[in-house]
Length: 248
Image 1 (cartoon, rainbow, N blue to C red):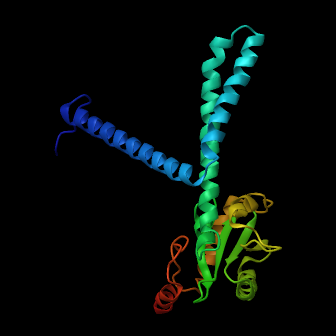
Image 2 (cartoon, helix red, strand yellow):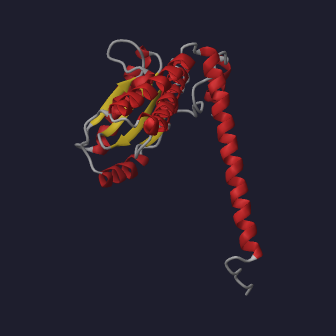
Image 3 (tube, rainbow, N blue to C red):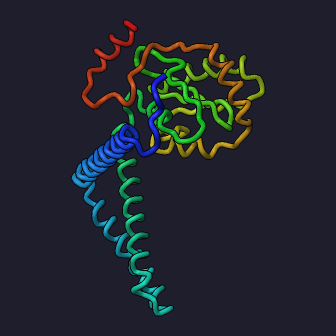
């Protein structure tokens, strides 16, 4: 058997050096992505920079003012700078997210993309039912129970959603089933508020029950052709995409 490298040996040091190099490269790539996102957002959003600068200055002034009361204004100023930077970064992140959702809104596949990017222990199955017009119903299993999310033309998805709710009810028993249509009309949930809407639903089942539900619902399968991954890019030819969906 080959000898195990001792701690501090050359192979061990080389592995650590390689790991550090990879980590630095990853960090550099992440910073470059953030900078590119900032440049794009700044070009499209004229209020971004004034809001970020305003948040930074306001935080510094508030902390500096509190420091004046206790005669430690210069000691606490770095804290004000740190708080201001965090506030500015938070504003940047929220406005980028809002911009992304605004551009994706109304595009086929946008709701499925938003659901798959949710944080937490949500079990998302995109496209459990759909049509060749790229209408779709997605299934989410979470603490509220089973949530069916439909996107597409309202006159088509309502019937599709009702069929899926009936089909799922045979399997889930007394577990609550929520149905949501994504859109901006009355009774619908806008894409940008979809994740928040799901988070506000009451918790009705345990994590163990979620596992059991996921296993049982897996047997239902999907009744949709393969749908595009993420929102369909603006300008994409719908007829070409629909032909591709029909062939799959």
